[in-house]
Amino acid sequence: MDFQFFTLDVFTTERFAGNGLAVVTGADGLTGGQMQMVAREFNLSETVFVQTPQNPVNTARVRIFTPGKELPFAGHPTIGTAVLLASQSPETCTDILFEQALGLVSVHVDDITGDCGYAQLAAPALPETPRPVQDPAGLAQAIGVDAADIGFDGHTPHLVKAGNDFLFIPLKSRQSVDRAMIDPAARETVLGVAGMVGAFVYCRGGVSAAASFYARMFGSPASGIVEDPATGSAVATFPGLLIASETLEDDTHRWHIEQGFAMGRPSDLFLEADISRGNITQVRVGGHAVMVSQGVITI
Image 1 (cartoon, rainbow, N blue to C red):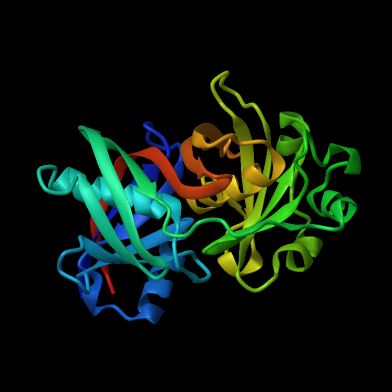
Image 2: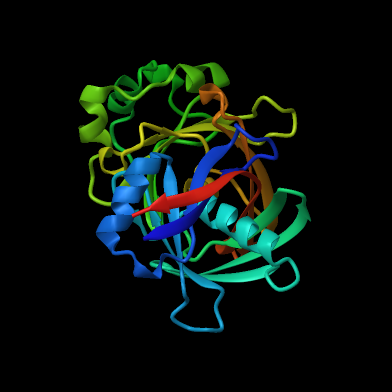
């Protein structure tokens, strides 16, 4: 059978930057095994399969696969797929509801201009209480930096879960982040925990004066991704680490996060978190997506 597909670059306004995404539409007839096979063939960070929603009031059911496994939720596939569907039907699809394995994901799309648009998703799960990592020296060795590079301004390594589980490793400088590289021998030990998506390595600041943080994300062995250019689900989890590391007053907080620069795939992710009575009440992640290609795949 033939299925139409599209590719987009997400968290960027420029083609051949950001994080590449494949979207296969009309995918009701595919099995999970076939979807995984197609995701391996595209070999992008994620491939989305758009299906008829189980509840007709929703926009679509989407299943998301890395080259190695299915994910319950992911940010850049949600943003990219929303921009694609909105660009095909801009009058009716500015507010989108996706059925994902983690639950309903609400996305608002605006500023569709030509092949590019901006979308902001409301995270379907809030960050859980961070769990401190007890061996920062071991982490430093695993990612090829000095132990003295780990941590800054109250930020220390933590595991945080918001549907997906991420290891957050703060480093003192952008130079340290650029120098980091997960040791293949340590990858299974550090990132092989069941449910782990990857390690989000970050520092304060960025290439742009407007950037709040600069980051890289090394994928777990199960994900089939060595490094991801832009990771919306990690950024959606990030406020759990931030509220544990900094004083965040009750308000809406906004951060601009740069990722993928070290890979030559610069990406800009825009994060918002609502804080009330000292707790996170909502997290939103936004970014642009731009069309790159379309075609037909035979399965």
